[in-house]
Length: 452
Image 1 (cartoon, rainbow, N blue to C red):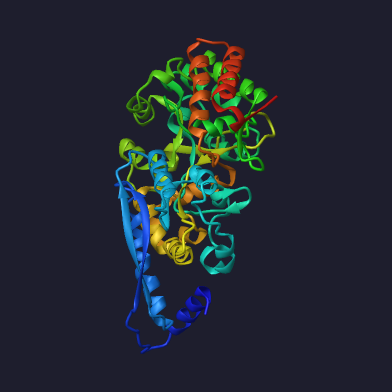
Image 2 (image 1 turned 135 degrees about the vertical axis):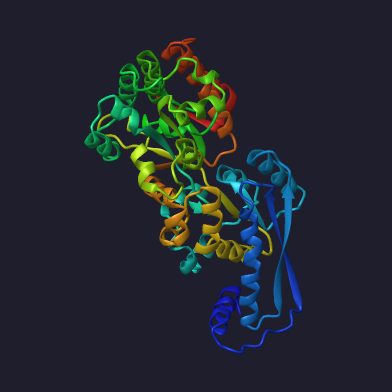
């Protein structure tokens, strides 16, 4: 009997009352690699809990096997350092059965022979996977195949302060129409800066638009809005276009010249950036949905009062770079990767069980992450405490994901140099573009494609 048919029999047997449970003759240990993460303990915890369900299924099927999860919890400071550590362990034969990872490392895991191809497993278990939000599969795909399962979701977008718009004379109709106009390509990135500058010049805000002050993925949605496709799927290489950079850096310069973005934005501290928006100094900010809790607290809004929050704040995708274009946002999911080990079938089933609606909701609502399954949005916890996360799901239609490439961090660091140079006036747009292209070509070599 195959493992899949064994489980199917187990599910059927589990419905019979009084079914006897055999004594387990063989206990199979599955290793779970996860960095110690106080902000998301259920990423690993849900896998451990899923072992109980799997053992019940095995017992109900009459199997004499059971599984035990051995947690390998690391002290890596971040997901990048952790990914490098797991690759080192794999290189000496210590391949974990399941890894909790940032999705952009999947390409490296596949190249190293660490990650198992999950296409057959997913196809054989439609009831466990068919409700996953389709866009999230893009985060775990490499050269057309899926090598992971989304563990959670997030969305990064633009936050706008409606009270400042009102103070600047904007009508309720105008405010309410912004999301639809952005999605239709009628309200562009240029319009965003013009609006931010207008509100600032009217005295309704001290600052216009603020963004992260350092290197990070948030800028990717702005780059994508100007037609920069960072990844060539067929060749599994990073890429950039000169024309896209010219438009992107040109937009930043225009924003600074208009007074919409502070010229010294990249010298701000993170505390200053957060305080600018939460302290009602800045009209707009682009960052992530996990800011919601802190915003509710800062604005003195009841965490359960959805209407009060959206009266105060509007969410929009990053507008298109040109009229008629497509808006963008960014999602950066954490994922489960199944190691290509002798236990990969059992490990994949654990991942499937941990990814179901109830366990994933326990993680998502307590950590301000969007759900991975559509059905979770109807669950009481999401409807009550997680209303903001439900509101973020429609934005995923326009989501971009960081390329599944190990050198995307270097790519981001180099393109950020251009952001800094243009905003401070250290370089012209053309100079910044040439500098960035030269650095990308020098540092990344064959790993990057330079387009016109």
